[in-house]
Length: 178
Image 1 (cartoon, rainbow, N blue to C red):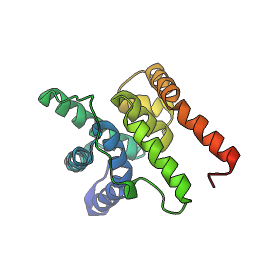
Image 2 (spheres, one colour):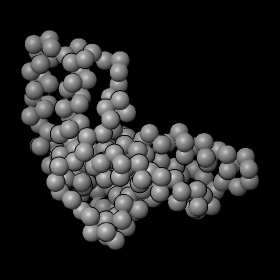
Image 3 (cartoon, rainbow, N blue to C red):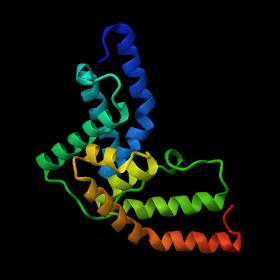
């Protein structure tokens, strides 16, 4: 647990450092930039309110993302908002590395669009495992689902995204991607 001003500043610093990752996870849940912004704000507030519940030595990112998911699910239940239609696109400057070649960025933007079209359950698992590099077990704990469900959702997402992987391999053979 964080106690005293020294630890409170560390907690706040850790929270600030985590914000880009937290925002990407919130976007994978919400599917829209403005909802992700609101979700991150609510998550930070809840984390600060419950700072005393965090146990030192545990995974701060996992703890915070669990709070984020809990808030999202509560919002979904209370507002009956679960939409399956078109998703808003996020600002690419927050998601794509500007240093690779333009072709790589174009491909990354296409991958992002396809990932955002996945069902929410698959999006959040893809975000946690492939982007945030949590283990299957950690992702399962964050999402409150069995590890088998994580593996099943990843398998389904891979099948959906397979044409993109084939397209990238074809372009790499042609020398189109750096």
